[in-house]
Length: 118
Image (cartoon, rainbow, N blue to C red):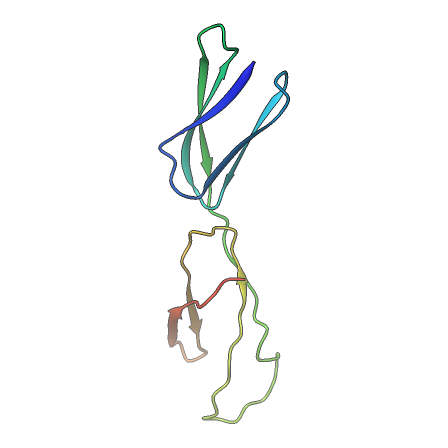
């Protein structure tokens, strides 16, 4: 028996693979971001008509994980002197875009695009 995998309406970022033996095939789906995807598995023994079954796979977006690494906590800085803020983050959603926002003690907010993630 041979087995095949057909993806219907899948956006970029979907990776599919089959492994195992002909008697016990296994299928793996890897996605780089959230969404709802329809996958169809078709099995054929080469003699009988192929049989198929479909399933919807729904993945929810995992949030990014930021951390502030600079400046050091409780470090002192002179008023009017620029201070660099370092806040690396990781995000398993490779198709996401990110915006950073700093909310200051006086209530002002500064927002800007993140330059890299991870």
